[in-house]
Length: 167
Length: 278
Image (tube, each protein chain N blue to C red):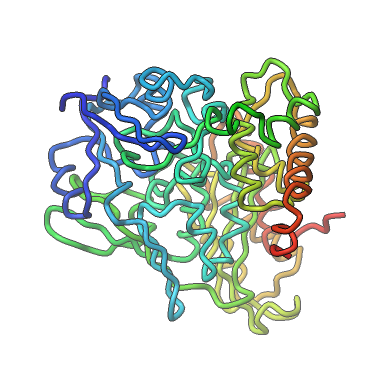
């Protein structure tokens, strides 16, 4: 089977590119679309640094054959900073010193975005479970958990009315 | 090998037609794609179930029917399958559970495949589509000898356990996202519905993971429990019987075969009498 044209909605924009058979979503994002925030770590689904959202849910992009998600919505870290401004999760990562080498950061943030969309007020245990598929080899888990809880607080403070409705 | 084609058929029939030409069936890709990425895949074509319409999850009239391509996340979110939630939370990470499928879980090597252990305890039935049409097979047969050439598991059916009869426990090296040292899943009915420890066991189906090349039934333990109460002593005795007669453990990075055999009785007991967590 020859290479084919695959179309995805990436960060709200329809993008088309040519994919060789068996190309992963990760390779397509990085090499065909130039979106290099998602990193290639283990390529085995064990480290989580390539995590992106597919239809709003975190998936490790290294294990997704791109043909299988044609037409779906993909969100990457590049789509998080609205208008170039860091969102609550990103700014909390900066303020809480939750990045060291930065290699795991893109995956951690995408998992956090999905968690906070589903649950604006997660417990510490919820956060730990959410990032349990993301490896940080700088042993920075503690500041990452603190940053995600802080991001949740900031987001709730920003939309007190929405929070009132949720309760 | 280098992948030459990824097929994404849009019905079960199309999957069967496609797989007649060879290639690997792929659910969420969590088992197949690591092999593809490392160049270790021994095929050149993949057949994805992602669009085959096999992702339905139903639970009604006491029976669950789960499509082979349903993700572990979708199973865990179904209100009628809440009893499986604690088990599903021991499998991979939430991210992996958005990808890994029920069908795929039947074909992963131990010490993975904890949902398959649950399905074995539930005595589930696999619905299989093949070149000669559809057939049903006990999950034990599929776990033991796979499916025929050109066949594909399209769904799994199981009778939902009555309240108070489902037990699950998995021992692992971390609290989250780790493979099994020992997994225990069971549907066990007691004469008083599990309300007290005085009731005696009316029937027991116990499946074990992590302790053999495939999930296995702990038949020695099941036999020993019948007619007796679920006390720590009886459960330890049953676990020791299983460790002698029912398992074929292996060494891996998580634990040695010796260790798995040694701790099985403890974890079988904990499946029924959870330790007090302070």
